[in-house]
Length: 258
Image (cartoon, rainbow, N blue to C red; front, top):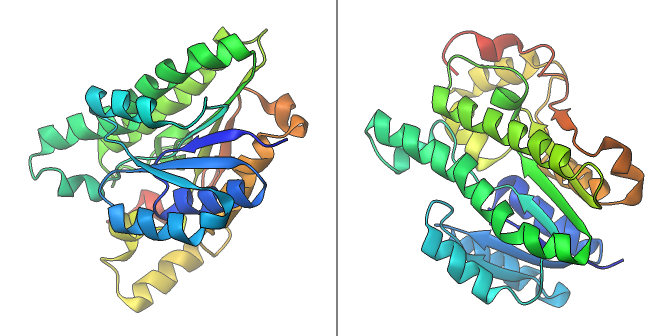
């Protein structure tokens, strides 16, 4: 059945893969972007035949949230909270570590909470809703001390939010899942880890990972689409370690300068 899907942070990386996957699965997709307007417009044009819509959203700005709600073409039935800042991308927000702390918590955790609060009443009224929170293996499952502590804290908050929501809706037809990706080939992981490495260092790091490869964003997108099927309901409330084993064997990313 075709549903209306809202995906935050859909202009690149895992978000863009999710936009493509949900559109190709026959859903009506809206996605948000913050600074990547050109990328968003390009993706929307690429998927114009699927009726995909790009909308601006600053997750840490309530006025921006209200503007998004006013521009949504139809009630959201599936919400994918994917947008976020990382340990390196937050440096574009501010050079001050205290302001970075605030930005990571506001964008990654509080902004997601605001959006859930805004969309839940309609899901409750319609007695249908799917909420997917994209956290991270760092914070959502384990910890990587070389990364920004507020990054992990914000991702841990998302994992808590997923469990909290499902506990609240344990007897209602609203399903909540939290996905915790590991080392995925995205601009964010490149910025946080890969870009500072030489080609040889990159090969050694990837070879040290449990699966000896990076995750393709399409793998996470396929999981998100499947979680919105009836077959996945047995996992409602689950915090899913989608890290190719990195969550149970953090390996090299717990040592050295990541």
